[in-house]
Amino acid sequence: MEFSGNHNSGAHVFLFPFPTSGHIIPLLDLANHLINHNVNLTILVTTPLILPLLEPIRATHSSNSIQTLVLQVPEPPVGSNFATRIRSTFELYDPIVDWFNTHTSPPVAFISDFFLGWTHQQACRLGIRRIVFWPSGAFTCLVMSHKWRNLEEIFAKSDENCLVTFDNIPNNPEYPRQQVCTLSSQYRKGDRDWEFVRRGLLDNEKSWGALFNSCGEIEGVFIDGLKRQTGHDRVWAVGPLIQLDSNVVGPYYSQRGGLSAMPHDEVMTWLDDKADDSVVYVCFGSLSTLT
Image (cartoon, rainbow, N blue to C red; front, side, top):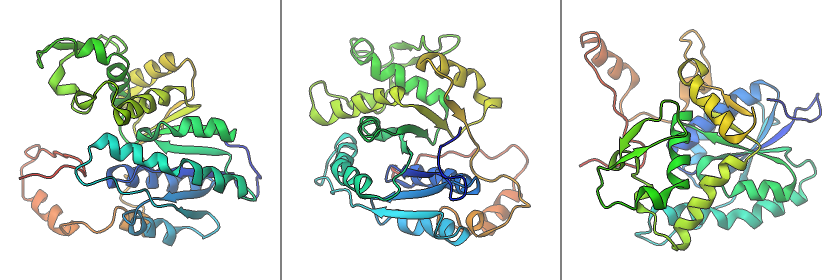
């Protein structure tokens, strides 16, 4: 993957994370790699949540390599559903365009989260390439693509345990609907917010390229499937984006993600006490609250 730009100063790329920590942190991991490859970045800050997460990358790189654009996303009404939250980000469409048009050296590419599919049309208007970023894997993308394209057929039956066949995935796997349709089950045909979400998710396939926080050794068959589905080879597995080499030290990897709810040493001490292969890690995501 290459971006055109001045060789000495590096290409200028715009990053737009979806404003939840589970999406922000992997995109900042990508940002760290891009800066290390002589790419200059402007990161859109839409919520105060992003600011402390930016500190490690700012401490690691020069101010010439990373700039921020602060534009606040309007807060949806209390009790709003997830679709309303996604659609609220569209309020930034005109301010972003205004910023681009007045910038002396505007970005040559636009990297945005998969929940921000509407930015594909925006990038087309600006005449630059939009690359969709998936903090998760290619398999998830194939599942979501099939679901949102075939909603009417999938939900034609009332039985939540009816099998959904994914004919866009190798070996055509089948899963009970209630296991794979948690978000799409909330879709309401004709609802302004949900139709917006559906269009955006389907627009991801029209983007110039796609980046996945995954690797070909694990998901090569699904990456190839996405290349066939999109009709081009601009689908890259660039993960795992977090640095796995324990010998690599520095302010970014030692501080990424902000403060932990439990000290790292305590977690490792607890794990070291357990027998091999006796611990299962389960992540419910940053938006879930457990009783």
